[in-house]
Image 1 (spheres, each protein chain N blue to C red):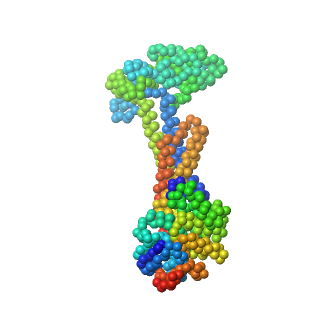
Image 2: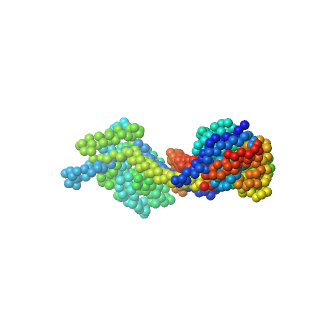
Image 3: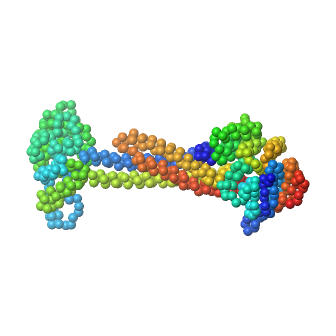
Length: 232
Length: 402
């Protein structure tokens, strides 16, 4: 069952007089529960691809089906709802709101979804528990270590139980040990059924994924697939 | 997103930047407080003047000899002829309308008053016993001038409190003979502690029957005739009646001026009302400035919190929700600032009332309401632009901090 399906997707940016083809005719199908890494040099279009899958960006041309639904034609409000319910984001810079505690940061997607207060508390608690952060619940981000911050971010990304988790250089701001912990957590989430897409330039981390995409100049150069390699 | 959550989030954002929030609150509070205090001052001035006028008595008409308007050069003015005097007969003629409740003629003059060896110059008012009721005065002791025909003289007088103190000191004044010029008058009453009535401090006057005053000053003319109408509605007919009567008596010459207290009061009311609106408007400019400040600070907030806005979008906030968050933040700010300003303004007006008890500095309800409304509206209006900018941010750019 295809979770993510991109058909002939282009993404052009205008830089002055020139048009830059950040994504050039991408055709990609990711099945539910897959673990995919996207690698490539900077400027190859891997982050743009991730943003597009995460509905933070819109394709210039082409179709995008998420879980069988065409999401390219949705308006802003509907796209926001898809982001909220079906997609989780983990960023390199964590992007925690500095004035909110760990628990309040994790609560944000639930607040935006309009979940009543009494239902939010147990869910935030469960997410904190899963990330082993219960005793850090009322700490502000600046009182947490880098690894703990990224765990808060993962808890926030998964509190709404999305089907897809997108991670953009999740270990980029972490030391080796914390980075390994974060990858372990992401992989364990994948084992429990979440579709995981990781963008990285670190081949050690990218190499762990069962399916590995290499991008260059807006195209998917190679697609190492567990069911046999394919060239795009 | 639920509204209590929107409020809580906005409140958290305000508390997250305390210096910025306090400065904005201060700006808004000063704006609102300025409106409250300045309109209180304007309103206080209006009421003060109104109070002064109503102490004259109600439904009052004042008849003054002479025409208060400039005419052409008539033979009369060339020959130095003065207008016809008002006389006691004129005054008596004015009692003939059922709309007139009472009249009091007045003559005014200065005379030397003496008791024993003490002597001072006093203002002498010649009038009738109706004056007491007409001016709503009270007596401290004794009684007022007797109810006799107004053309009858009588050697009695009523004195003000200050005259009593200065001429009699500790000795009893009631029943004593006071000398005014060449004549002697028995003191039959002492006036209560009424204040002044335009220009003349009643505490420094001696009142005698009008006929006696005309003998004392050797003049048949009156200084004023005070007329009290039966009701507010009767004022205008009475005015017309006075003018018609006097013109008839003065061979068709309209040589008097009738001032109605209402007209004077209404004029002052208009002047001070306009003044209040004006200072209120000037103060409202400070509210406007506070609004622009809010816009400025919200714009800075949007650029400071670009990453946060990007994150909220990534987490599934629709543009409308971002808009709501920032507008609520500004609204909350204006409401808090306005409340603080309201408290500050109320305290300010209270202080003014404490310091100057005679000055009723009460903020009119419309000013309070308008100040609150304008502050909330400016908060709303001036936060729309920054909030729209936030809502339209490209999430990818916002997250990358560009």
